Length: 245
Image (cartoon, rainbow, N blue to C red; front, side):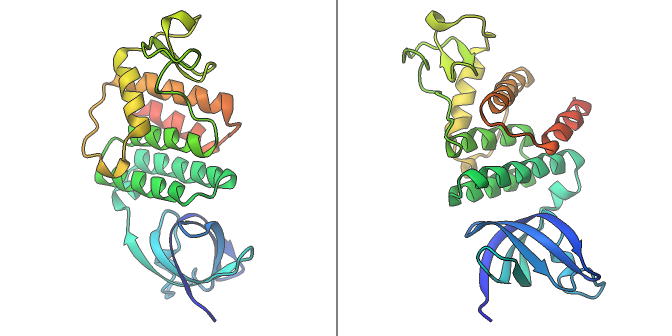
């Protein structure tokens, strides 16, 4: 039996027969794979503690392409305890796992995994989970082939930007503004910065609530218009996010 090492995050677990589990794991090497953890439900099993949702670890598996792989053992890379013990953070993280698995169905680029991990680790550090989620959402758009234009007016290329438009695909100038909401100059500048920022280099996120709202509204509308994705975790996140306001 050949053992393969993969870095990954468990996105779902479900019981299998009397004592085992079936896992879905987002991996850097192979995208989303199905894995059986034999005996993992047993109280004395060494696999019990490393086969729960949101485990970020190096997994040693008997990998079978296109089939169910078998888990041998796992070494935790980061327990993500700050996320797992905070309802708001775990709600954002669950949505990100769900979203990532959908994006990987369209594009299996390894950079998608790197974006996810970087985002989760910054949430774990205590940075703003809402803005970090927005950054991740923005970066995923290029892998879905529907990137907004945050460099100039989406219609004419004018560099003097008035506002954002989901219908017109990003920035628009005053000459091509029709009935779109006018957002603040800070929102225009910050959403472009978030789109291009290196997540690993972020040390602080100090953004006003009004700018956060304008950015989040644009991203939600853009996803609704262009992706066709419906995620239950997104609906749950909207409800719990509202309760924290």
